[in-house]
Length: 246
Image (cartoon, rainbow, N blue to C red; front, side):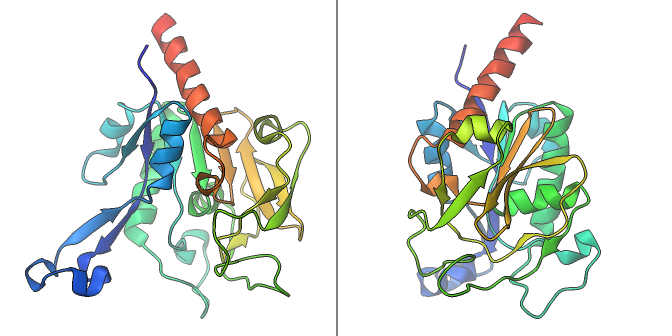
């Protein structure tokens, strides 16, 4: 049996973001961006990473995958959860919102395991009817976000809810990194909260069917192979076996 194929979502930026590195002849082009730690983490966990482009039919793409990572990035458009944008809202990418929402629906329709990270975590909450706090600030050197600290450092405490799938996956993990300026406000319907930060911010949730694990922190920047990536690849491999026996 081949290694599971894991699709990873990413960003699309105008080439001008690279400034003087882009010659004038290419200034009107765009590029797709995937931080290397995501595919590295999938590979370290035993999967085959695939950096997804949005230039194909989502259903056809997902039909070829064994699992999906919804990665971090820009803020979710507040219109998706019925709010106006606050003055502190960061950059939004509505086209990415739409694309990843379609990825989510296609993956769920095929019962693929999904690992949602940071922005992905927030998007899943919104897709389940939840809302977000559009902006939070660092308080007394603690909390969210911590942009001046190396993202590979665990900087705040984590309390995992006993009995959840997340607890069985992350084990004794008690500290994580903090690279987000939005947080969950109202938790979406059908999501089971599985982890909190020291200040009560929701840091993890899952679905009761065991197919989705979502975390606010960035596990791809921590030890490799990280346990949540191992969970994703193991679940994808288990589904491969079930499909082969069907």
